[in-house]
Image 1 (cartoon, rainbow, N blue to C red):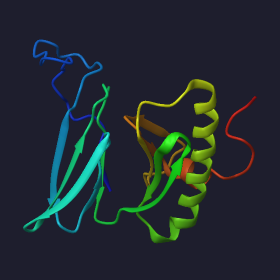
Image 2: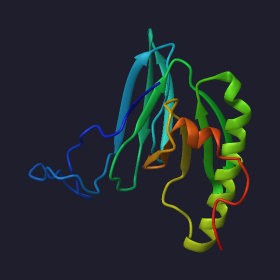
Image 3: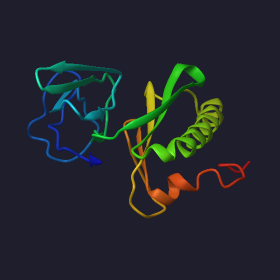
Length: 169
């Protein structure tokens, strides 16, 4: 499993490139294209996503219409997913690499759906149309997020269904 946390992008406004800006800030990434060997699968964030086979390569393309701070990407030869729809027609999925983790991935997905529905009722619909929780198989109780992609360390993923609510009222 590989992930890129922040491929440096050139800042852009709604109408023009801002080449003089080198600091990381909200910007637009209209299109991302990733070419991998045909055995690989990938997940790219964005408002639309497509995948096609071109010769011996698999090409993944994503488009986005919302400003972002980062553009996380995940790919592997072993990517597996459990998918669902949450409130407000948001696609939500759990991504993992070991077949024996499918049951836990479903539990993570259920918890995430409940959290999303709860916080959507308070703060409104998020700007992203899809959210993915990625099991990153390194030890640790940690998480990283960007543009609808949420990386969870092994302990965060494996213990997400210990019991109790994920929020306090």
